[in-house]
Image 1 (tube, rainbow over the protein chains, first blue to last red):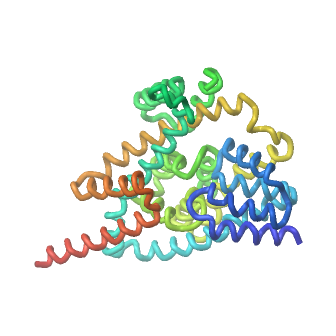
Image 2: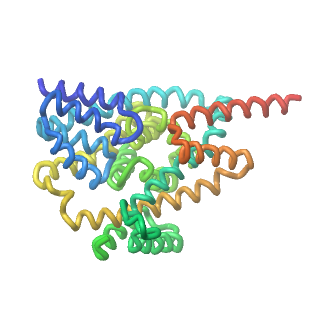
Length: 186
Length: 179
């Protein structure tokens, strides 16, 4: 039954692909070669679409691949397979965590942890920044050439706006970004 | 339960580009609007999400869902965060396979990426102000930053070391208190 095969293929992916949606790619290529449900070219297109739509890349890829393999039920089988390992492990940790929350040692541990997490998020921000205002490869002989000035202007503009209207909902900013992106053909 | 679903559906719907982009949305929806978790708790969940397999966005949903409504809550939140993806991708896969190639889409996405950068930056600044108040915290912050940025140490190791560090200093502080 194709649904079971889809489920297990994506369960394996969900279990071993650690560190972000793109880590699922090698597994997806393997699935493509093993089962032939979709080709490598189709995978490339799926990736482009998955990066263009909301939602985690991994989930988007699973949906697309599952759908290509076996329609809507296929998509569901793939997504459930992908998400289940993480869900089970995380739910287990959540249950354990809630019991240990009051523990003074756990408290101390997380106190040390929080600055580190802020650092990790900062690193992620730099990645996001790179993708948004740089257009690599750029011209090596021109200083700061990878910098895409219109995007940078939008960045400054949106930041100023968000700073002035602190209560603005993130979604509004995203929609504005989309709007200006289209208007200025970023 | 329904509120849990709605909140995470919204989060799943507006997360563009990776787990960290979700943080501003989560802060807004979960912390400020619904007041289900404190900012510190959200940071803790992110830390846990770093160490567990799977998409960080989904794991956060599971954690918050569990806190709010046990195992059922975890399932509801997880399903809710994943559903927008499914609902959007399937029609695209069925009808508009060249979706990513349309110029409009690419322009809009370029703008969205900028907006996401702004959101994450504001969140980082806010988190920094609130969580880095002592010299030790600043030290941990910069150490983690350098390890990750310059030496490309995996997040998992950084989290584990930070936890051990926290434990170590916490125990020492307690011993000094007792003296």
